[in-house]
View 1 (cartoon, rainbow, N blue to C red):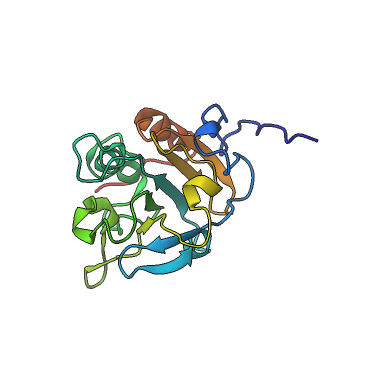
View 2 (view 1 turned 45 degrees about the vertical axis):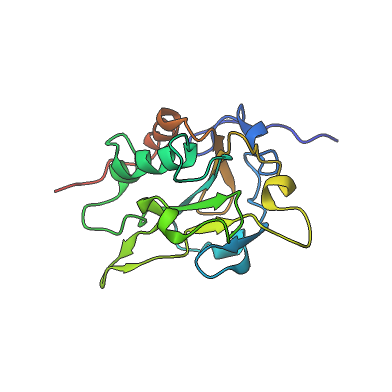
Length: 199
């Protein structure tokens, strides 16, 4: 019996872009996949990096471009989240809180870990954390594998366009969007999250 498409509700978006990440069906549990953490080249399970801490997860699966390239959709997405006043990260994160207090943003790149350096990453993926302002190096991963299909192949992620997979705090997929669907992402979170107090 074929699975039915997810029904849109307050905390679950429509599935019209699900084809960009077919292995992460909207409304179903987020299924882990092997990746390599960029900072230390350690193979890990992507889904196992999330803590049960009540935060929303935003997984940005990069397009084919290098993140330093001018046409990188992933880099533009990170700039939007970090700098645009319409960004859900800026709109819903309380003043004085860590940038990832509400949204845990992580990125998975198509390049292997030897093809990228942490210095290539957008600043959003290297957040400084209180109380000592230490850099969190555990936000970026690569898809490289030698023993089987990588996460892009295993989860049916569009290699040319990339995808954004939004995961609820209960680890169910809430939405799948293109990397450039900035307004749609903001509108989704505005349905149920309050604007943060900024002063």
